Image 1 (cartoon, rainbow, N blue to C red):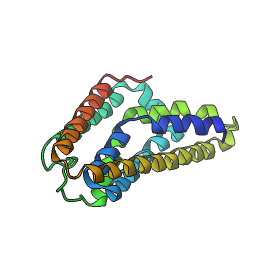
Image 2 (cartoon, rainbow, N blue to C red):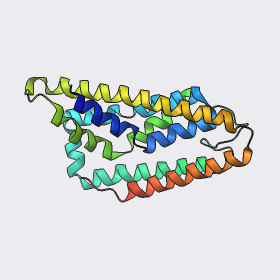
Image 3 (cartoon, helix red, strand yellow):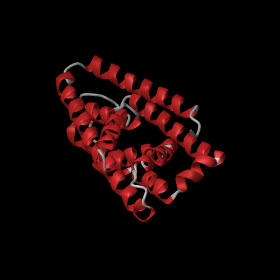
Image 4 (cartoon, rainbow, N blue to C red):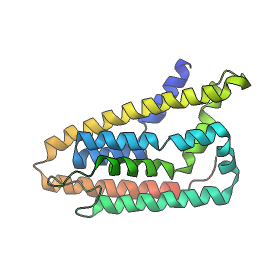
Length: 204
């Protein structure tokens, strides 16, 4: 493992994407504990993509237009559903001062599905990890798993920090219902934008 890999992975992890937005929405809507559950779920959703890259299945996804499009539009539909949940009062991602917390497992499950339905993740790992391997075929699988585990740990840590920041902001904003409603609509708009971006994605 090299410093170059750590820096590359860190830049990728901190970049705002669907997982970051989901974790921020949960942190603002429900607080620090639920945000940690969201971070855990998003991290768990990386596992199938890492496995696909390690086993070479990501290459199949890269070359199969039908499989890629099917997974992609399932992800688009899920992002639009999350947008609706953020926009409507009482939705799963609504930002309101009086909303009850969802069970941690449900929050984590949504985060897992969110990353699971992003076909670009498998192709991303297929492109990101090989350049940092030693070149020894006998240890390639173990090295891929090791690099992937580091990436996942970094993802979880950064997402927890994002969630803690959002939860702290929630504590400051609890008294302003208008701002909380505006934030819910803003998250809905971001999820719609992410769905639109995913809809036009093609295998690299």
